[in-house]
Length: 110
Length: 460
Image (cartoon, rainbow over all chains, first blue to last red; front, side):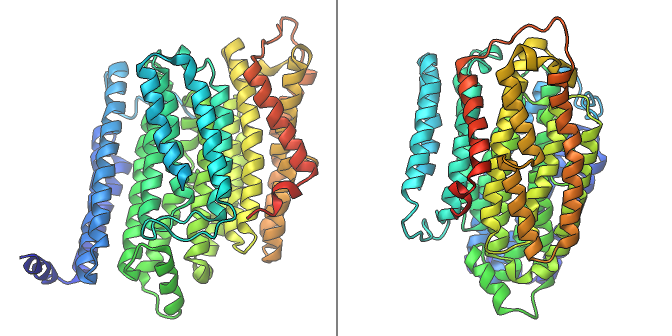
């Protein structure tokens, strides 16, 4: 069974995985830079992390090395910790300003 | 390695102390625990360090030296926090605990031997700091600092991870030794993916370090966070960031220095100019310290641009000098803020008459940050510059000296305000014993290292 999944993943050439991950990662980066809603920015960051997860898994299968997939678990666990803290911060800001738009947060400027 | 275990268990003990309302025990337990942790680290100094936990960590002399300096800085900052957190909320134990969790991440960051541990260390440190930046829940500036820090931190983590993934794809391992062997065994045909990975990692780590052009979050976050947390971020966290940077680059990428060195050279020069020139225009002392910390990140990057056997030592010297001088500056700033409620340069007017002790220690700190001889800051800069000269980066050193001269202007603004601008209504500040101890000790250390640099200059 496990062997089957590995073979299925390998039916797509490695370069395609790299390209797909790079595209998803770029969408995430652009999202962080142009969106103004804190939650959407946050989702874009998650997109970046998931692009990395996909890339690590693909490399892991092609190298026949499990450590890449173990790394993915660490990324997931720590991303979950970040989500917990990040959403708490966004809720805290919403309570004070009644908005999640990052443009209202410009009290601190050059 | 017992250091890491102790620092991870200590915050849990503190949380229990908070649960049982033993508030007076918090500070002594924290300080004693940290002192024991530093002692345990020093005890491993002469042991022959081998990678431990399946090659995940390596507690060598480099790791021990940086662990000790971060632990000692944390002790000094924790002592300054006496009475500070009580004003924010009654749940004081949590603040100490989160600070120590962050320190545990920092210990991992300076002693990793596998990119997995680098990532985990950085995340443990950052997630704790996001919380600490926003501990003033009702204060919009503190909220804003927390959100900016969080979004930028998570963004930079994405770059770091993508870089790590590409390195893994090229070399097939996360282990530092295996990655180094890959660069050595393929001198001509290194995968382009590997180079992209190195660049991504530079971006990610420069974000964490606050080096230009990835510095734009630094001033806002440093200004909005409570001063104690700013002190922690600009000293301990910066030291850990540069230590992690140096460990990775000296262990893995030394043989491909021709590729990344020009990139870091540009980053260093831009960081120096942006940090120093923007600091000239600041009216707030706290914000000036934020920009000066950007420029100090530039000086710290010197060691990596001129990577060699002496790099670890010069980073250690510089980070020590910078940390203790910044702790003095933030300590005095906290006292001034408590009295006047403002952190502008004007609020320092007349301090030389009303509080000669504070004025003297702050003057020593400013001289050290500016790099005037007979202070630790001069020795730090001397080591950095001589390392760069030995690698024939003459132009870089000239730029750095120009920047050091620019920085004298804004550091001396404070000294002038304290001694030559008098206000009639200045009342003497009450300096609590803890503050007196920390400030006096740091000032003494600054002078001692400045006169006898041999105490710490040949350690690593």
